[in-house]
Image (cartoon, rainbow, N blue to C red; front, side, top):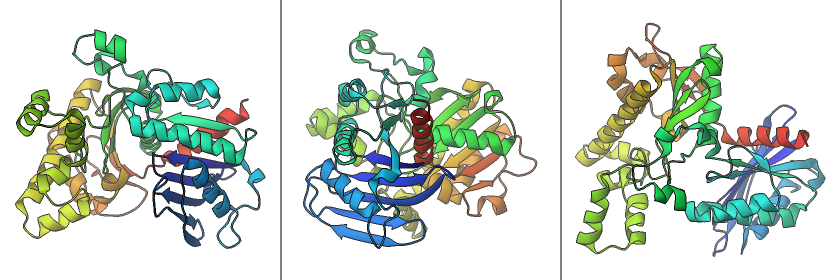
Length: 400
């Protein structure tokens, strides 16, 4: 069975094709600038063949036609006809309180995703456009499945997801903590349990998805009890360009002093804060690291804030679960920045966590970084959200 996995935004469409007989990725690609000038597709196969093709993509339907052509291309294709694609799985950012698990797409599901657009305007709108475009190109006979970023977090208790604002706003607008990166946290928590050698249902785990967007999740006995992102992905700790949690009065104070509208303030917090806002250098940690190494004090401060905030959240979740049996780091920075892992774990030495420098400095998809005498194990685990989506899609289609 071959399954096409789609991660669509308002102006982009990422894809991977899996052969689920051996769970191998056959090819992947990305359509950029959908709806604008200079649209293009970058396509790469597992065996190293590549293609970049320019062409106007006015909408997601046009993008799917580009994807279809790439999949069957004489030079870089991996299938001979579309009939080889058995099903399609979509990543959906916001499932709200409507969806606590992956589901097969029908009209009611699409309407449900549309109803949640106010909670994730750019993401969910793009997801709906992708589902519609996919149906037009691949036809109604190819089943589609939607997998929600928020679903893994749906087990959070009320004490973790209710905000202390007037309860009527939860009742009227569903203002609450939802959490994101759930598909990633779900994958790495299962892999972490395997590494420890115990059943996921018997463990207290902390999973750290640290990238340009970041979140930390407490997984107790296989269920999420808390996570750092909230109503939107802005909550939690500082990220590439996002501020993370703030005193709410910081928002109103700056808006009043600078004469900013709500949308302008949202833009400042989401796109001009975090590593970029503190360092003044970049949202890319590689640029911030280079600047720090060259003596840039603000770049160094940005990193110190980041390390401190990550460790603080790990410590709070440690307490919330009444202990911790394992920690893992994943995503762009979590997987590739040894200094970040070392600095964060140094804060946690008071809890018995010890890092082995030799292990921490290695590279790979899955390896231990904690010392043999560490009170708990710590690992680096490369996330694979697309594989989770493919697995869910396969399971749902086969159970029909």
